[in-house]
Structures are given as structure tokens and as C-alpha cells.
Length: 134
Image 1 (tube, rainbow, N blue to C red):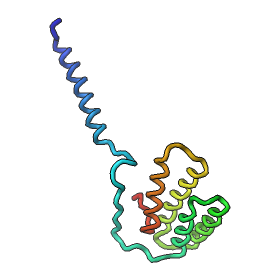
Image 2 (tube, rainbow, N blue to C red; image 1 turned 180 degrees about the vertical axis):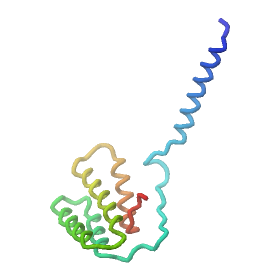
Image 3 (cartoon, rainbow, N blue to C red; image 1 turned 45 degrees about the vertical axis):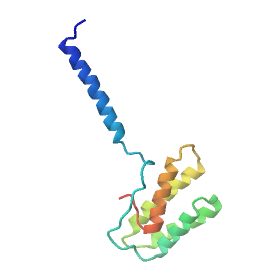
Image 4 (cartoon, helix red, strand yellow; image 1 turned 30 degrees about the vertical axis):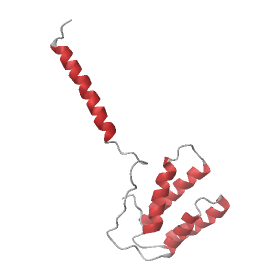
């Protein structure tokens, strides 16, 4: 059976789809693969404030039982309410990741990607006193 032009077009489309999927698979970024993202700051780390101290304390207790963690989170929330500087948005972002982490502790799953992402983010918050998502 001789091949007609439409057969060549169909073969070219199939080879093109194969090549595209191969390229897409090799250029896909996995959240757990590769080196951890490096966070660079363009401004100095803020001085130690009571709100960041309260966050550091709550983040240190993130794996603790609820009766130990909840008072630390309440203290942190009170400090954030009393803070009136530019770091409030960073504090709120880091608090969101802390609560997300705690949801995973309260409702365990076999998927550990959430824990890895949350751990990386919270460690950046503690280290840089900065919401590292941006």
C-alpha cells in the first residue's frame, strides 16, 4: 500500500506531539525536585519585633499538641494586631502558612508535598522575618 500525502501529514503530527510531550516533560518544574529555592533579600532583615518573636515561638511549636500551640498562636495574633508597621503583611502571610501546616498536622495525609512546601516557607519566615512567597 503506497503512502499518500495525508499519511505523511498524520505521521508528522504524531511525531510532533511525541516531541512536544517529551520537551514538556523535561522542562516541567516539580515542587520537590531540584535544589531548594534561594531567597535573597534586597533590604536588611527587620529588627526583632515582639510580633516576629511571637511568630518564631509559634513556629517553633508547630508540631506540638493543640493545647500548647493554640496559646502561642493567640499571643502571636495579639502581637500582630498591635503592630503598625510595614511587616504586617509579611506576618499575615507567614501566619497563613503556619495555619496551613497545622491543618496538615490535624488531618494527616500520605502526601508529604504539602509538608515540604510549608516547612520550606516557614523556615524562610523564621530565618528572614519575611514572607518568602513573593
